[in-house]
Image 1: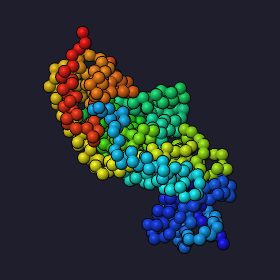
Image 2: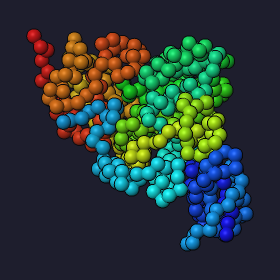
Image 3: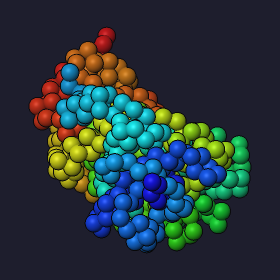
Image 4: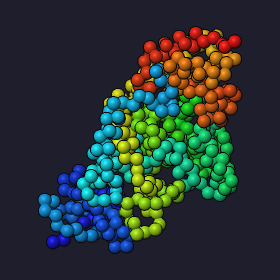
Length: 77
Length: 380
């Protein structure tokens, strides 16, 4: 099963985004994206529940969202 | 050893810093921002936490505004060479370090001009007026030290920043001598580019420096290379901080710097400043009583100075005094301190002896220094 993941431009923005979401009670995890569509590898934020709201919150806080990708389901997260 | 050369680098480093650096080799041993395995992510979290602490420390917009650099010098080079283009004009103070003056000198070959504004120690109105007079319609940037690394003279940065912005220029401040000693608020003081060493008043290790950007600011890059993301794209990523951090970062240094900032926060920056200024005022008062000592500024006060003091023994070369003190296990810095402009201003053509305490310096250290100065006899 694949789950959606929010793509951001760097590990700094991924970690900042994670912090923003956690401050709003949204669970979030930083994950490595092995290969994004055009640009190559990068980082994303995995949000197990409420990804649309999470993306809205990140945009409101000025985080540039590159798009969404998919992660493989990893047990425990 | 009595170490009084803290303007060059603070010594000793706090135990907190040493321990954190040692731990970093074990706990943060993987390359951050390059992989997804746990130690790489954990190391990335440590780097992010340090960015966050620095952002809070200087009241920056956020961790993405904190760029790690190997030195304050490189941070200044990044700003000057990343911003200035043919035809641009720069205003600098007459107290600048070679970290500013040498890159500027080189940039004159690319059609960039600069004007030196005279500072007036103890009279901020005249200093600001001098900067106003130096600004031209072509002025793109004001670059100035927050405080002289030779004479401790502090500049009214917030007022100079307001002036620069009024005329459409930006301001870059060299905070090498003030970060960790004087409270700095990048937002309140409207500093566009804040450059600092990490190994001085912030008590981090050598090899660490900081460039703080205002949110949304973009410079051309000094170097390009791997940033760990967007690897298929040959153009350098646009967004800070990684845009300016190509190559593997100094993780143990960054980790040590984080501990250094915690140390400063724990002591209280105002407490550190007042303690060091008390020592410098005590030293100044005792030196003033000695007829053979030449001082170059008014008595340093809390509003116009930082704890850095220069003096000479009349008729004796500063290097000879330094050698004499070194022979008695007292470390001071002599000569020109990489700031010939400041020496030209003050007429110290043969350099000075510079004393700069740290939070670890005691009054007893200063008394021992004074005793040795009193005991100095010119070699026959």
